[in-house]
Length: 88
Image (spheres, rainbow, N blue to C red):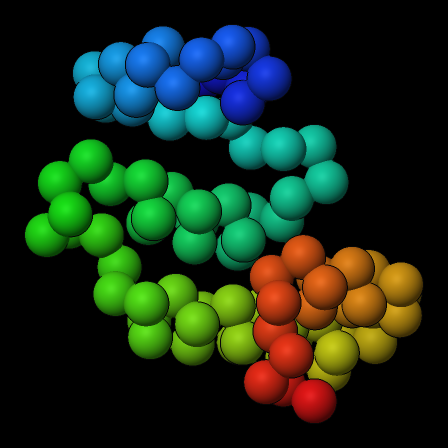
């Protein structure tokens, strides 16, 4: 697995993904969020998660963060990063 920073042009990244590779999980990324990311990277678009499923998964992850009383800053960052303004 590679990091996004390793690719200096889109062609190299596309080739990396076309050969079945994925980007590695970012350090501060939860497994739940990384799984959503992976579902978006399916090369064959028929296997990619539909937008509504992605939104539902991210909403569920956000709600779990709020319910478990995680650090409010983490909740805010998650909400900001994924533009979950509809959860207000």
